[in-house]
Length: 452
Image 1 (cartoon, rainbow, N blue to C red):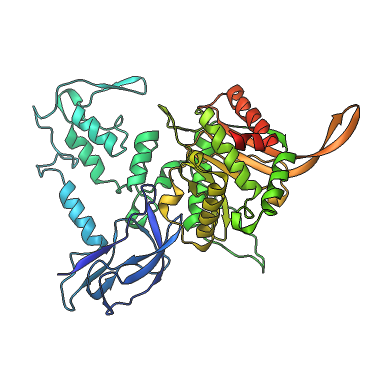
Image 2: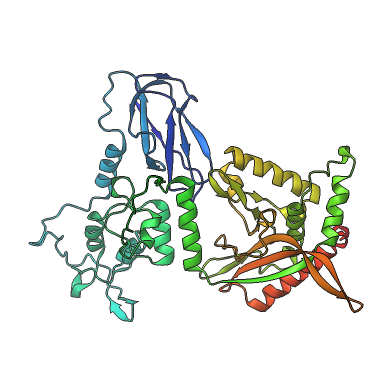
């Protein structure tokens, strides 16, 4: 019997994957576990393996297509089998049959007729300052589907909106991806009638695109190239825009005496090879210091979720990695429990996997705080953008000489720049400043921090 091969889900936040390359052609024999195609998410590339043995009867998408997760991408079976009911179109037909409201004689305008006594008689819900009469079942369905119900004309008793009214409106609207549905429910965003996904599916990005956009004037040039915004670049763009538009970001900058960490880094570099300390970097030192201080400042090791703030006891420390595919943020799990050497080793492993495109989705999720380092590029100060829903992100800057007064004499000491961005919805300025000050002190006396 023919079996559909679905685009696998790679984490709860992944809506779709781009097919980079088909490994099998239509008509090719496949065995269970054979790689059928290579796909790309916003996090990494991976191979989709066959889930059955047989012949690849049909491929439903081309290379370069952006395919929603859990969508059939191919069919494996025996030659000559009828596969007309399989694939994305067959899936949509099944879904439509499942969600179809009960067949009744429609009114003149095509709406389902009012059926006396079918509506729950419990009363209305306040919406936008007015009263909207809607039954609990209808309200629950509308909220589940991220549907604004205030404008629906009700056919229940006294004009109350009942479940069949909501179903009627939903039947004319394009389906939502799971991530779009969650965003619509949590943020109350307007859902367009047609989305930019395959078959008009509404993606999470479509919910934020409320205003009309104006195409910019394109000036002709022999050196002009056009780069499509897709894959990881598209996800980065969406996340950065969402971060800035949904959080109240405040950045404060300071600098810390770097003599202690530079001296310690030099000792590690010159240590015997068998100790395994020579690869410890300034960034590793900063990750270690942050992991220890976050335990003392749980309000910084937190997620802001709109109606609540979740503070974490363990520090899952994300750090930014620059790759050819774009910015990635792998996460060192329970960094507060690791030694400096272990943090250095784990950071090196995760960075390598990011650069090579082998990082697993689980290694890119679950962060509670993020560190991003532009010091190697000579950046003296910058404004890190929050990795929402995290409440804070630390930017590590370059080490620069700074004049210091010592016994009526000006001397120059190396100082490292620190830029802390917080979500002011979750953290106030003064507590965040105290965290930054203690971090400065810990960096300037790093060996004392190691001894704790």
